[in-house]
Image (cartoon, rainbow, N blue to C red):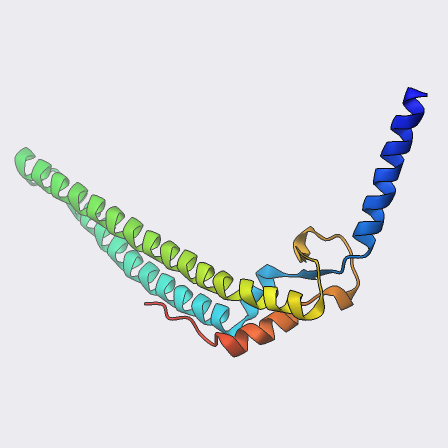
Length: 174
């Protein structure tokens, strides 16, 4: 009798919860696509990509100069005195450390700007989705990457992109 009551209670809970979930409207949105394909997202990506490429070119030139200086120093090793050689190698090491520090600083700055741009976009997307939920009586929004298969009618990605493009045409990154 004890097991029968437990079975009845568990079955009742499952039926009630299944019925409750069946009444809810669920939609999905592809957040990665929204972040990458919105006007503001594309603008931020282009800006950061250009900044990264220009800094990479600058660092490649600087690295080339340091390698040339190293090979020149190795060529002069037998010609110059030990003190001059040691002084030159210490100077070269100092330049290499400065180069590495500057490169790390620039890459960290770009990563920080990327995170800031992403946060700005997400801060603008959240109210858009919340308003859409209220307007259409939707209970749950799920990210598309965790959904195995669904009807295309429950995908609100393009709607979110359209609203985001109208409310936030670009980000101000510097």
